[in-house]
Every structure is written in C-alpha cells, then in structure tokens.
Length: 149
Image (tube, rainbow, N blue to C red; front, side):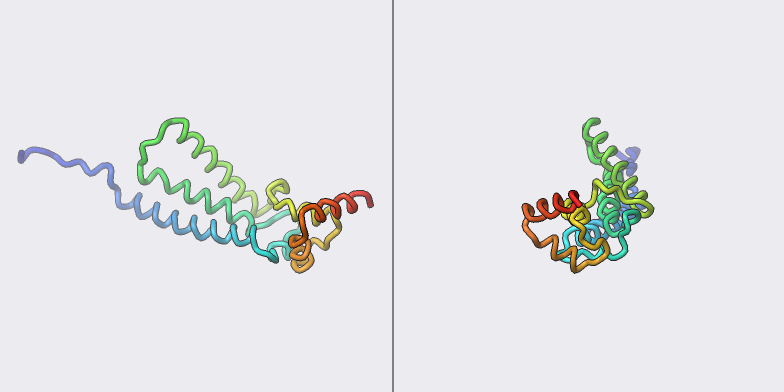
C-alpha cells in the first residue's frame, strides 16, 4: 500500500488556466461578434469598405478560441467528432485572421448584400438600419430594381 504511485498526468494546472483564459477571450469575442451581426443599426458599416471588418471577424475568433480550449479538458471524443471540431477550428481561426485584412463577402449578412445591390449608401448606418427593418420581400424587390440600373 505504501509503494503505490498516484499519477496526476491528467490534471495539469497550466493547461486548465490557459483553457480558462481562452474561454474568457472566446466568450468576449463571440459576444462582440454576435452584437455586430445582430444590432438593429449595425455600426460595422461605418468603416466597412468591402475589405477589412474586424467586428464581424470577432464572432469567428470567439468560436475558434472556445474550440481551442477544448483539448485542455481531455474529453473522450470519437475520432470523427474530433476531426469535425478541428476543421471547424481551422475555418474559424482562418476567417478571424483573414477578416482583419479582407472579410469574405459571402459571410456578410444577406440584408447587407441586398442593401448594397439596392443602392443604399454603404457607410451610412442609419440608412442600412432602415433597410434592415424593411420586410425581406421588399428588400429583394429593391435589390432587383438596383440590379436593373
């Protein structure tokens, strides 16, 4: 009984602390990105010129940070589930990093793409907010009229 060794390999305080920090950063980024995506009057349009958009990239950075903290807890995952989580992490982190230089247009909200097609001033948050409040059918009609011009 006295010669038994207790292995504490599974619990590493440094990994747990790093995971907690990543979770906090991830939740903050996720919250900031969600607010940028869902605000009634979106302020990200003030500085968005079709290239960089850090407020929208924060959502993907938050998801990536949350996924990055997962291995510290060493959950028993099936290989396929772990690969899906890994691929999701790669997509989110790449979108986050690239979003500081060029934010992919296909990840913008649909109402924003329709507003630009309809001719709404791209950097006017009030005009974009008013367009966002309009019913989707009217947004589509305005975008089609804008394409005909």
